[in-house]
Length: 180
Image (cartoon, rainbow, N blue to C red):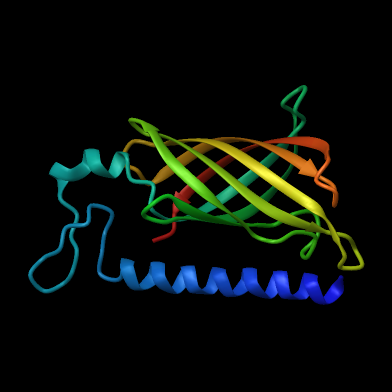
């Protein structure tokens, strides 16, 4: 079981590294509008401001506020990073209750309308001894701020045990800015 878990984690880390390298090589020399000048440098054009309002791609610094689902009362706040890749893939580098109690999440995102997006992602949970404890599934409703450099999101999560049985739910809000 431990060898299998090590292989799964190793495969996930390798996949994250490959996706990160691919995203970096694709994004070199690009701005959010995707316009290139003659010297290979991308420059922002005020005419394209509306495009920025609807472009999710990029890396975002996130502040996650975990909330009581019944009362919406804030429980705790943590930092995180999210990356949205062209084509609808995403990664979430969150900080859970302890540094190694969960994996990073991978998932998909889609544009809904105007500045609104939705994403679904999944992460794996681990017990204190490192054994597999189950998974988490995150559902986000995201809205970009005007100008496309900030976001706000509501998050609901489902917590599953090692047998994929739903054992709990969670709620959070997120605010974020583009990592520039």
